[in-house]
Image (tube, rainbow, N blue to C red; front, side):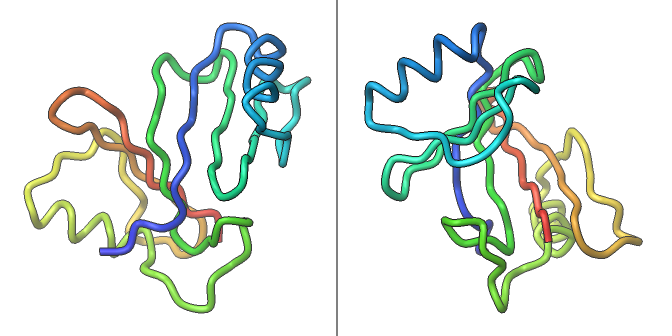
Length: 123
């Protein structure tokens, strides 16, 4: 099962303070809009998202259909197919992708320790 490109989405208290901290660690802004309280930062192939006021906890994020630079892959496993496979293994979803759609969609689940995992397809 290929879940797609991986990043960590961090729920931050002050996006400017967090940005300055991660820039000292060698990250640079790669996307997002600080005025809208979200930024995507990269350090080599490592990607983190900073999100202020958008969710309560940190989230592990997978993006089916994207490589590490958000380029669309020629072949990938659609988010709905991933969802069906996980549900067949007894995984409970917190939110689900609409099976009747195509293109962008997402689902959210939790691991046994309460860590949230977002599978978020943008293509």
